[in-house]
Length: 294
Ligand SMILES: NC(=O)c1ccc[n+]([C@@H]2O[C@H](COP(=O)([O-])OP(=O)(O)OC[C@H]3O[C@@H](n4cnc5c(N)ncnc54)[C@H](OP(=O)(O)O)[C@@H]3O)[C@@H](O)[C@H]2O)c1
Image 1 (cartoon, helix red, strand yellow):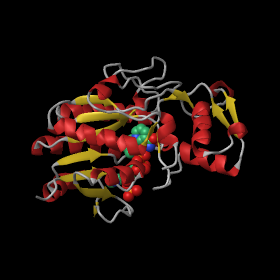
Image 2 (tube, rainbow, N blue to C red):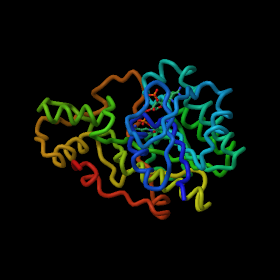
Image 3 (cartoon, rainbow, N blue to C red):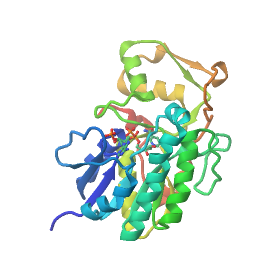
Image 4 (cartoon, helix red, strand yellow):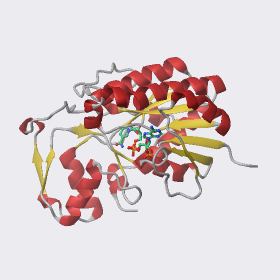
């Protein structure tokens, strides 16, 4: 019997590359990209600019997926701050339009949101905690969340934390730069008072596949927090990464957010309470295990 088809938007991106690999055990994977396809030859790559909203319905009708995981986004927060209207098209309008299309086809829809919908003052946040985003990106995610759930009440909105992953697509993100600095023995100052519950993209992919399963079996709908198992500061994360990968952490220095003038707000602590996801079968390994080379 042929496998059911899972459509992953943003499949060519950082999380997408891990999700495409993990999904293949159960699914025939169709990966959407805009500018450049991924390299996984087991994926059926399809080019589409999702911002062409008038073509979305026909695209889904043509591909006929059994479920959609929507990762595509512009998640560069300074870029969103500088280009709120341009980025809202993908980050808000496309998410809602895809949810509407999934509602018409009655297929599961998983939308990846972010812990940056929270203000960072009242962690750990449960799913029912009020959102209060301080950045344009966080505001767009919060707006998309509400629109997605109104358009398709069976959808799952997965709030993702800071994610890391090495060895696949090398995004220019915090963790990649941190690992490069550790390898080079460069000194680096990291906040001791900015707290996150990070998760590897590999484990995040398992969480998202669980979410699809929960949606198919009608075991959950609405918000779901897929954060990592430990709340750590950026500095502690740097030390843990150095220890896990066998580098000298002595070049890392702890500093405070208060020592830096930011061009945009940086929430102090957006850690999510993930007990709901745990009760539904999400079992992330310890952070040290996730940070170790595989
Ligand atoms: N990375 C994190 O730490 C993190 C944390 C919390 C939440 N999230 C959320 O998780 C999701 C995945 O994040 P990521 O880090 O993997 O993102 P990413 O690496 O920046 O990938 C973005 C993806 O979106 C696609 N895309 C951009 N514009 C598009 C368009 N107009 N039409 C179709 N596709 C388009 C890109 O395709 P092309 O490259 O082909 O243009 C790429 O595949 C996002 O929703 C993000 O907001 C990420």
